[in-house]
Image 1 (cartoon, one colour):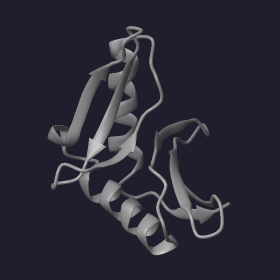
Image 2 (cartoon, rainbow, N blue to C red):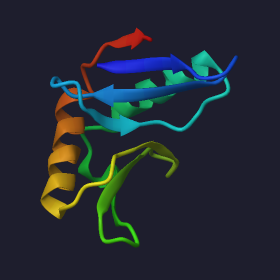
Image 3 (cartoon, rainbow, N blue to C red):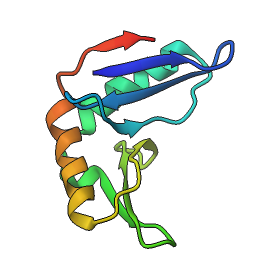
Length: 106
């Protein structure tokens, strides 16, 4: 499920949550609700393509990933994972959950 949140006035942000309620992907802050909704649509479109995932290691050794659109822009980022396998599980969860996920405003 995508959760669309109004941050401050006209600023919006979304998260993708797994079935267990855990946040598996977070967006940047968008300047409008329509832009955030376009971001959700882009996640849904790009989630199934493994080549859209940028796998990274933070300076502290933890792992995370970014999901990128076809133009190379980051459309979502993961939480930090203590293991590479945890990160891969997170990617698989986005692939599984995002394409058909609904959206609710919170």
